[in-house]
Length: 294
Image (cartoon, helix red, strand yellow):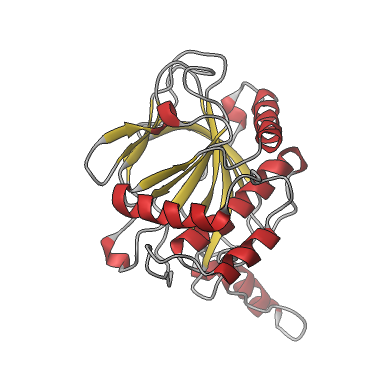
């Protein structure tokens, strides 16, 4: 997904994180999420170096097994409960986001992608069927921010530049789910390439036979990350590196994964024209029409 332009103010990627920042981050993470054997300061420093040199980093066994199992179970149960009639679903969300919009579950099959996609926004009450996934996504976004070099809560709320983040849970279905190769970056943004993370909840060779997540690294090597990732691992990568989901083959499940998308709301969606008492009837009608114009 190509996100809208926004203004990060990152530190230098290879700088070692300040101990105070890491301590604050650790205190904000839910108990039981991160494997106790992980030294967050060392992990973040290593992630910065690996992302700087290769464009991606796989954090092995970052999440505890019990926590991961809960997320996987929620995802499988959620998608198993879908109505098989895809005509009942709206188009999967990709593109402009309006502040205050409802969470969405959509489906799309076209030349660019074939996907079921749930999008959850922080301004809505969390979907109780996916509460563990949403909590995990928010927490890993904080870790991503510290790796990137911005404040750990950046994107928790809508920032002054309209930047925010939201949770995306996707299912690329068996026998053809895919996402075309793309990058999430424009040089005209004049910022350091953003960092994404992904948590794969189904796995190549276990849940599906072919396809998966591929990235072209900074040495121009095509890497099948899904071949390298195991349960409890987390993928971090620069959005400026070409990446794709190759067509998913046969198996028991398709490819399920989630991440926290950096995005921005449309400026018009944050504007409000007051049309209350004291307005004439024609002015009220005009005001209501104006608020519906994107």
